[in-house]
Amino acid sequence: MFTSLQGRSAIVTGGSKGIGRGIATTLATAGVNVLVTARSQTELDATVSDLSGQPGRVSGLRADVTNPEDCRRAVETVVEQNGGLDIVCANAGIFPSGKLEELTPEDIDQVLAVNFKGTVFIVQAALSALAASGHGRVIVTSSITGPITGYPGWSHYGASKAAQLGFLRTAAMELAAKQITINAVLPGNIITEGLIEMGQEYMDQMAAAIPAGRLGSVADIGHAALFFATDEAGYITGQTLVVDGGQILPESNQALAEA
Ligand SMILES: NC(=O)c1ccc[n+]([C@@H]2O[C@H](COP(=O)([O-])OP(=O)(O)OC[C@H]3O[C@@H](n4cnc5c(N)ncnc54)[C@H](OP(=O)(O)O)[C@@H]3O)[C@@H](O)[C@H]2O)c1
Image (cartoon, rainbow, N blue to C red; front, side):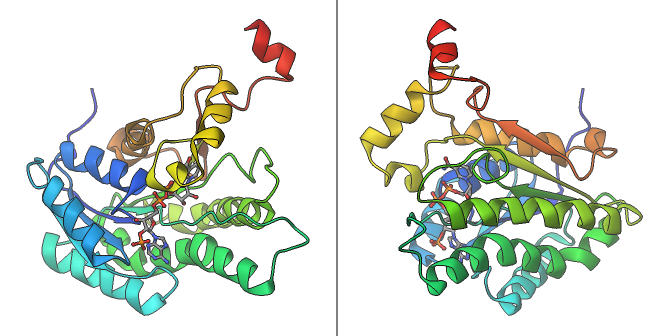
């Protein structure tokens, strides 16, 4: 039995859609008061309204993770609203596709700015509030793409997702004495607005490559994040948890076919 998280306070970046919204839903269902951040006010409003019936209070704030000032404002807002900050879910991310020979310096900068630097900025902004909590938790949404697998068109994206893990391992050491843990969830292919934009053909071929026989749900990721947020996970830091229905396991197409 896990200790209740009722009344804890969280930020979920990129919480207006997809995986972030799934994490926010899982936390709010567990009684955590959640501030979701994103750039689109319309989508933030829709998410806040949809999650209004949960045990945890959900609010929204426009904030761009590429801007350290926005990250500081998000932390100030959540501390003001909820009286502190216990959990940071560094989830905001983008995954534009581009083959190596076509990638511009701007394409690379943009992906690293949101996925990697955005993760660092929100964690930096939250450090003193997390230390004050006495049981601070950082949960990073990385990916199997980059840290474990490759996919043509995503060299820059894969690098940004691996960069999050390089950051996490040293950050875990720096934060341990403050009783703050930092861990990452590595999703496989999860049905989100972002994934749906890749098209039905992409989704069908990915589902066929997953031993579990289905794409993941945002709740699958939400539950993994919730585990890292618990008091009982307090001795786990600097670690990664793959949540992919077994997608990274087959050694070959034949191995998958024989399963
Ligand atoms: N879906 C998958 O299969 C999958 C697999 C592995 C890893 N992931 C990772 O999961 C995370 C979420 O992906 P998703 O599929 O849920 O994507 P999504 O449906 O496109 O949602 C992305 C969220 O991030 C926000 N966002 C984007 N750029 C931002 C910025 N500069 N500042 C603040 N918020 C920003 C978006 O809102 P605005 O656009 O309004 O800002 C939105 O709330 C990403 O880190 C991604 O790399 C996804």
